Image (tube, rainbow, N blue to C red; front, side, top):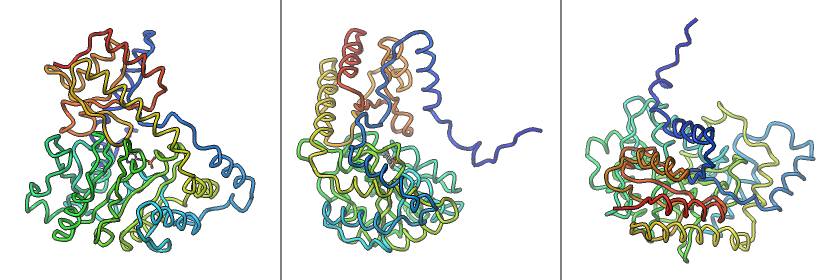
Length: 392
Ligand SMILES: *Cc1c(COP(=O)(O)O)cnc(C)c1O
């Protein structure tokens, strides 16, 4: 029997990172001690009080049964209190918050609620790859909003053609941004997004995964704190990056009630919620005192300064980013992003992510993640220097 895949699978763009993993594996087989600066996954442990809460809740048989679909009331209430404390945004935990199995899960499913075949969704390019693939899986077409350094890596809403606006149902945005590490100044950009969304009846999905990973006094705003935002959109959020909980798979979406309700309704047909001990642990995480950040954020800040300083010694001209744990930089002349990544792997045994993996507008750039301990990062930097990697 021939196994015939459905078109929605065969039509998916090739997953660049699978090829990249093979290259790294081959180098490791040859005995190269590859230092990967590719993965955006905190190297710090989840705070101990969160793990303790999980253990305690796991002992209770009441938590061994199917959880509720929309998430424990207590979890949704903890999310609402966190929003109130952090952003002064009021959310009704009963209708304006839904739990997610990591924000990626919600991002991947939201197009199924609002995209019919032939519909468009506006996605940032470069951008987190899930936005575009999720739209494709739902039968829609992603329309790339090109991010450029000249506009601080914000999309130019005025440049979106009329016929595209008419067919677009969703718009994804993400600040602090992966992969460019850009952050918004104030809320002016979000205000123009609200206006644009209202004028064109487009649902906005702001991905705020990095809202707490910020430096040098910069405080990231929530999309929902802008007047009118809750009428036009939702915000995806996650405990993954904030509390070093990428493996736990818990997040949420919050905002416009009908959008949250539709996402929750879809999910009742797909999953059966999140293991309750994980939700109790997440509540403990959301109540983490600010001291927790006293260790993690300075470490990311210090590492990104080291990376930026090293690249600048090698000929680049970069500013340390205000948010995320990434550094985004142009590749030297004469290389495509894949060629440059390959070159750095061959010459220095260091892996940097080629920008093309985040969309065609990522071509010409590479991304470094600083979620790696200081000693390895310093080793990577000295290898780049010794290998004569430089920007010209
Ligand atoms: C890491 C990341 C997420 C996903 O996080 P979850 O672990 O699924 O909550 C979402 N968006 C961006 C841009 C990310 O980098």
